Image 1: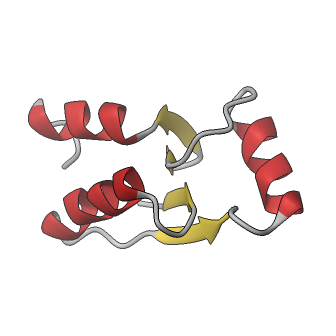
Image 2: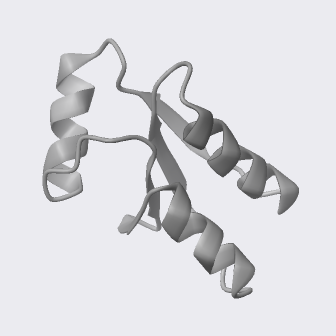
Length: 79
């Protein structure tokens, strides 16, 4: 399973998303878009224009942000 989180520093929802993944012992790659304009553009292209973080991709499928990840987890669909 491949998990990518577009994140920025001092983002409380990014940290909460990471905690959910950590609690499931899932590994993930973090891409910091806070100071990298190219990575921010990449995020917007991949997520249909969304600018907020976190934006989370599982197996290259955009699932959304923290709320969507939390919902998947609460429904037992995160693994």
